[in-house]
Image 1 (cartoon, rainbow over the protein chains, first blue to last red):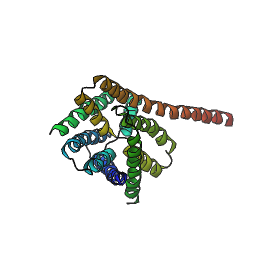
Image 2 (cartoon, rainbow over the protein chains, first blue to last red):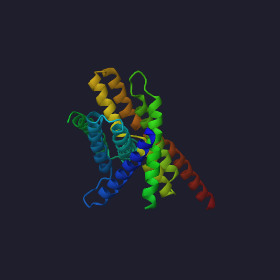
Image 3 (cartoon, chains in turn purple, cyan):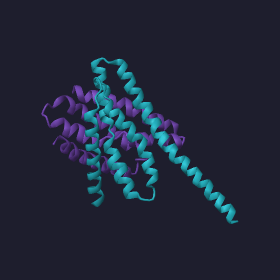
Image 4 (cartoon, one colour):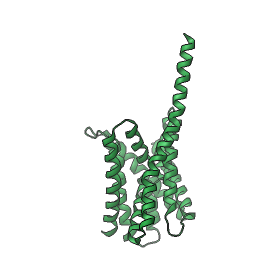
Length: 115
Length: 133
């Protein structure tokens, strides 16, 4: 039944990601849509770090980690955005998106893990 | 509202697919499951997005819903952190390199494949227009 837990939480995570992206992109000063994915992936990494180390119940990781954060964060959209920035010749934004997402993603998963 | 329900359903299916693939794929402690899932998703998403350009609903529920939930950035970061903690630095190097370069290159390849198809159709359109004249 673990898969059901993962599925439901993953669906909720997907809705959080999609609606947060839509909400952020509606804001006037939010000029680059990839920033939403960046914020989502970094915050999701932080929370996954927290969930991975601080909860030991059998349901906690499948529900909050693999499910909620798995559905919330996304690797495919992130890389498609990188390709788009590259093809639009926006090289500085490409480098910013890649370097900031990976470095802060790793830093924040560690912060969450050892918090 | 219907969009939200469909996104939930396809997000759930994406997560469940990831869960079942992830179960069978742990090789000697090397976290290969997330790696394969992420590379597969990064390659397929641009192809899907291009194919469904005319159908925005289908494009979104599978692209944002299924592929978005199927792939996961946070697990890749946690896998990386775990390799650092365990001191498996060779595995770490391999994992990080394949994730960063492989993810980008496969997404690029996926885009390129669809891009090639477009150039062909564009040329065909131009040829058609010229023959019409």
